[in-house]
Image (cartoon, rainbow, N blue to C red):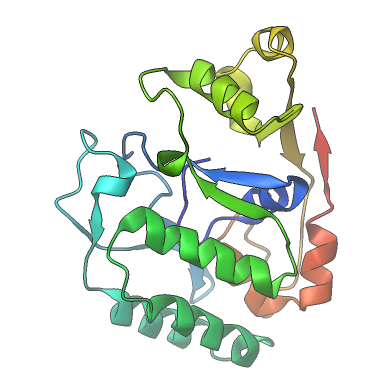
Length: 224
């Protein structure tokens, strides 16, 4: 999967369900996606927040892009939005730790954040960067994913549900790999005293739920 910026709970279900999670960082950057932005709750409204980038372009690979200088602004926004959330004092220092990282490479910065949150959630998945693997980078789409799976001796490959429209189970099966997609079940929790707004950043999930409750949420999916 491409590295996402504080991704939603389904992304973490995917990380938790596998032995090795590939941070797909040597593919083209996608503007207006979730690589450098996500949604949190501000004044009871879904609000998009964005990590600043330097000269980002869809013609560049994710690992060719550097992050900008709005970390402090994002931290202030998160602090102001969630100061009264029940688990703010547990989670905000972790977010501060992530933003204290001096790494400017976008893919490494995001990879570090995934590993820090995984450690908090007791997820023991191993992380690898696609750019660091010895694989044929001229291959496209599912052909490259199949090759990476073979290199890692994988018998199963799990992708996000959106991959159903992109990848062919028969092609993976012909290579001796079982392809499945993770379908997140309906997850609901209390956000202050307001109507629930779903599919926000993991930040929102963590601010309103204990570690134990989140670990139960990680199990609420089906493979299709």
